[in-house]
Length: 383
Ligand SMILES: Cc1ncc(COP(=O)(O)O)c(C=O)c1O
Image 1 (cartoon, helix red, strand yellow):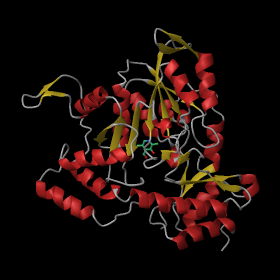
Image 2: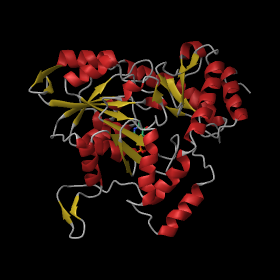
Image 3: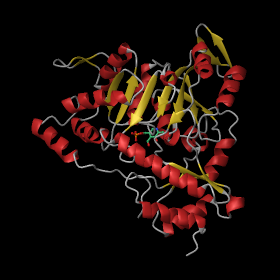
Image 4: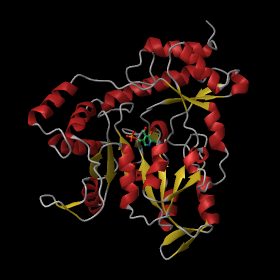
């Protein structure tokens, strides 16, 4: 089977794990975790990094650090992995769903229109005109390795409205803005080291931030909010969210390969783009001009009328050839647990869902396998 996004082991994983086993420190809070957090600073947007069990926990914690009240509202894109939305619900807040644009990012213009038309600003906060609830934050998702364009106008707008920005960077580790200023003004960035990501720790996440107070609170809450660890005195309802030393050891062995992985991913992207964009009715989601993307997954965008095969037919055909592909996420505003929440002018998301699939993009993808995938698309799967 040609897999969609497989982990790759570079050879030093066992050495790091062995070292970790020898110290008998395998759970959270060990040296490997500290080293991992420090080493990640080269790639994260904030000064302070806290490693967590996964990115879902990092996102949950990020929302919690904003000190939400029950039923505060948080704006989210509907096109994202479900964890983005769940992180809002875990905090007893309500999501407001926004549409995506042609690049599968939050539609900025619709966001501006929504805030201008449907909210008001009072006593330092933005409120929803309809529900009268406070809009606390916006979660931006860097889909498939491409970064959302944090331009000055956007940041000023959110700042004026006191809408905090959480960045779901689960998929965009190693991507960066050419203009370094763009990183500024993001309150929390959350990363994932799941097995299918650019580099992995087996399972893991990280929250990156610039405010030491936030970091201290994140550390406290993520390790059971212990005020006095020896007497078991707790001053809050905390979580057991810290990354284990074992996971950090695997993560440590992978970090040094990040540049190599990114380079290969760019090559994979370029070959897909240069060959598939010549096929009538198909094209590859492009890299934005303002950033260097990690090209985590390549997205095939299908015009069924021009190409002659639907998204589902293409997925089925690839399966017949033992090639794993995946649909774009089902828009979250249409999913059962989220039907009751507010949504704003969502028309593009469903269209993109019907047109997009993720195609094999692993670091270890062989050139011959990639050529086979391209050929199948060129020949419309005829043998
Ligand atoms: C956009 C996005 N957010 C959050 C997550 C959750 O990450 P994790 O699996 O580390 O909890 C993922 C993981 O696939 C993701 O793609």
